[in-house]
Amino acid sequence: MIYRRMFGLPTWNARSPFSELERMRQQMDNFLSRVSDSGMTSLHAGVFPSINLTEDKDHYYLRAELPGISADDLDIQATGNNLSISGERKIEAEKDNVRYHRKEREEGKFSRAISLPGDIDSDGVSAALTNGILKVSVPKAEKAKPKQISIN
Amino acid sequence: MTEAEAKELKVREKQELSTDTEQTRPGAIYTPDVDIFESETDITLLADMPGVTTEKMAIDLRDDVLTLTGEAETDGEASEEPIVMEYGVGKYYRQFTLSEVVDQEKITAELKDGVLRLVLPKVEKATPRKITVSAG
Image (tube, rainbow over all chains, first blue to last red; front, side, top):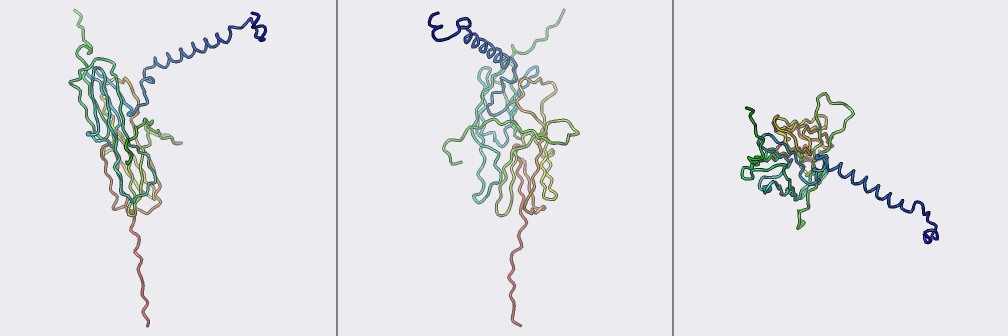
């Protein structure tokens, strides 16, 4: 007490800096839990490529826009409940004597892993690349499929 | 690319077109990424338009204004329920003004793997002709 008085600190709210920090920490926790609760935003990993994932009764369907990428430059693997898509986008060099006005298209490597929400049958995964759109069809595992229960 | 290690591709949000005029038909309109380069004989344009088929692609050139329009096909079945939707599907639209005179008859367009390649040949410049004056 004597020390606090000596340094001119008001003794009656000496704890306030810490309670303020505590309050900020709680707000941060609330914010983070809100963000991770809304599945849509948290799953947008910001990793190339952007994906759209849908499901029906028997399958998950994963689509990605991959213009100008040939099937040979793509690698898709299924392990457990995870799908990984990796590859490289190559843009062929044009003739030397050309002058670029715009260069917005990019080339480079990419790799992304997606964990699917349920069990999958990794043997039955098929993929197709048409018009620059990759579509991966992933059959759901037998136990993950919804079962129709009949009422007697 | 001469670099030993290819760089990593980054996600870029699809650019949605913003116009003052309202569309009569609903749906998102995106601006495709393009490369444009010029050689001595022609101008080449490459545009990323994934999901667009040749039937749904329209290229229009009038009064030096080049318009690209494409509609991406949504191949999702009605029975599919969305889980994660990171990109939107819609139309592509982009317009350019050409400063060079283009030979309209020789324009070629090719759509492959969702990439449009448009070659606009320049009009051949009149070859300078030397006129000899003969002494009369």
